[in-house]
Length: 283
Image (cartoon, rainbow, N blue to C red; front, side, top):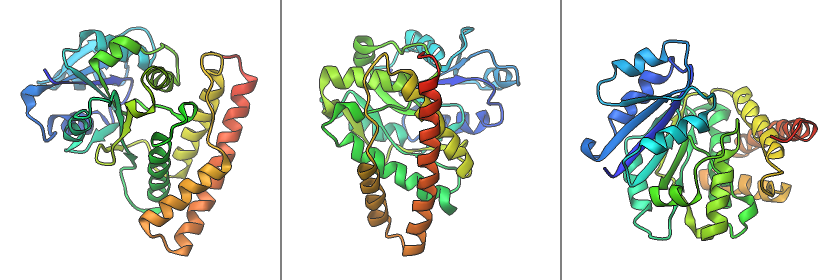
């Protein structure tokens, strides 16, 4: 088995059919990948949807938390590569081929790619373009402290997970902690970003959803500060990422202005999340 696709599930019945269909329809030989869904105590009918799907493995993890669920699947997985996504995501058809191409480089240990909103219109598209530009900039950096992770679109060599895993079983941030372990052990070149390794993220609908995510990320970073040191991007680095986004996508001035306005709101959400994180007890 070449790939094990791992998906934690908690009360996402609304999105599960699209997620399952996308994984079953990947442009890759079906006998070379397995799909493991881990029900994490769903109460909305998600488990019934999973059990009705004929060619997936359904596991259970009673301990609440998506990282506990992922660790359960890692223990059961048979693949040489572990590919992670979430149950409110749908990988594009070429997802596994992009991962396969990335791991042709022996130095690559972790691969990540874009998370796009389901609709490529309006300001949410421009914010997603900015996030992709920022990701490319970070993962081309030689500064380990700015590296982070996101398990809704991540692939890891099994041997790397065996060495640097499992995930810390906490509510948030365990993907970043894992990526930092890999970078500290293998160097920055161990983490690769691929533009063609794309997933649609159904939760990213509208600016408020983006602001909620940014708030959570800011709070989470503060709450794992006792586990590892991390440096958020500076204002000038974020400005450079925005400029890169504008150049790459050839935005007109009015679109650029709208992007900067949206990102200003994101900066406020990040600052508020960081403040709440500092005031709360480290977890």
